[in-house]
Image (tube, rainbow, N blue to C red; front, top):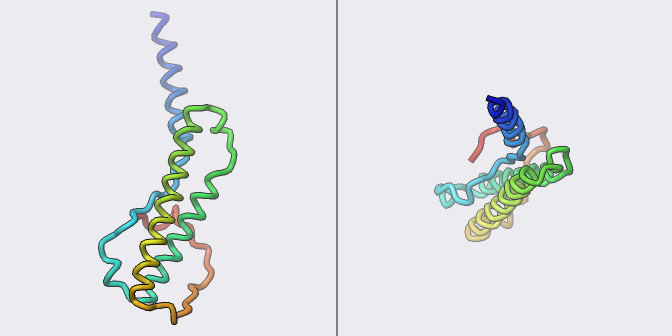
Length: 122
């Protein structure tokens, strides 16, 4: 009977630990419609991928959750995966950008308070 309170507290600690793992948005490298995008749309997609990459880097700061080795491992894995996929998507989209010879377009999207964690996910 004394084992039950120990199990209950272990479950609470495990639940809190699992909730504290960083979970940045991990974008898909390919969505399937990139070849149909025009130069401006490709530029917008590249900028969005750059914002996702930056958001993943922002997750990479020390927090109290990194004291626990379990959460540290999974947080670092998630952050690296998110940043890596964002960079691969940037490279993939830039390939289409060059293929369509969009280099003559110097489109810069307007600065905004875009937060990829609140917006759509890929």
